[in-house]
Image 1 (cartoon, helix red, strand yellow):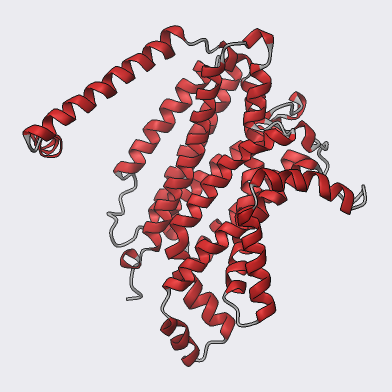
Image 2 (spheres, rainbow, N blue to C red; image 1 turned 90 degrees about the vertical axis):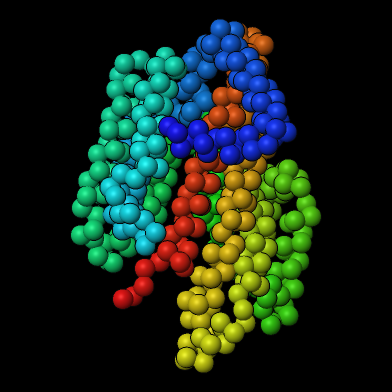
Amino acid sequence: MTTVLRRLRSELFPTRGDGLLSIALLSLLALAGVGFLRWAFFQAQWLVIRANATLFAVGRYPAEQQWRLWLLVGLLAAATGLSWGVLRSHPRRDRTGRLWPRNDRVAVAVLVLAGLWGPWALGLPLHLQARWWGLLALLLLIRWLAGRHGRRLGPRGLRLVALIWPVLYLSGMVLISGGLGLVAVPPSEWGGLLLTLVEASFAILLCFPLGVLLALGRRSDLPLLRWGSVVYIEFIRGAPLITLLFLGQNILGFLLPGGLAPDRVWRAAWVLTFFAAAYLAEAVRAGLAAVPRGQFEAARSLGLSYPQALGKVVLPQAMRVALPAMVGQFISLLQDTTLLSLIGLMELLGTARTVMANPAFLGKNAEVYLTLAVLFWCCCAALGLGSRALERRLDPQTIPSAS
């Protein structure tokens, strides 16, 4: 306790002027916090969120098929717990190797509080609350088992754990859309948070390889490839996203026959992909420029071919440099999905506008927008935390030596 007080004194009250400024800022924050809590607990009417919780989550997804979404969430919880535990069981040199380090204990406390308070606050029935508690217990149980026994996995086992995520993504798309014996659910019935995450994840996964190829093309010695990449990047960066979304919705219907034109949801997803790839290419190009030319020449002198030198020596270093900018672009892409409501897709913001237009919920804008802000913040915070964890694991100073 004495150490904490001494640290607070050194950081907040090192001088008289700094102390007065700290007191003023803390007072303003306290007043704002008290006012917000008074509004949230005594004035806000959260019935609009409770009554439309399913609509915000999955839109008009058929109720009799929502078990597939619960199954997908369960698989995601299991994969998250497995990956989390395996990473903790293989610590870097700067880690203590403890099964539950401090950050993990804080994360578990937050998950438990959110899992217990969220379903109760939304007024979910007991069977849905039991499902949420079961998912949380599944995540923590697999996290504990993987943390205790993950060291038994060799390099091949670690690669198999990494392959779980692409397989799970493809399986999730089958569960959501149907196929392989499941009833088809058209994209027009997707909505809310489900549609937002599908659009964002699709664009994030595909814009990464496309952006890398564009960055390499812009640095190519072939004039046609270089100038083609430059024209594409500059055209996309010079056009507003909303304009490209309208073009994608309208032009594809004219250019492609009716049977070949993709659904409106997938048209928007491809536009988001091509848009993000242009910005991602510039981030990757900055990372490539930060790698000294001698790295590539040294790899070539050791007998590596051009693709081998690029893939095993240059690109790993460039990706580590470009990672913060790339994750920032991913977060912007997630936030840009709110523009889809302007072209008639019922993603999270479009669903919120529909709810607020209901005469029964007029004037409840603050509650709805605050809920949207919290949901987007949680998604963006997850991307940011994952990025920082990946940066630490890719730091050359924390990677164990071959000895």
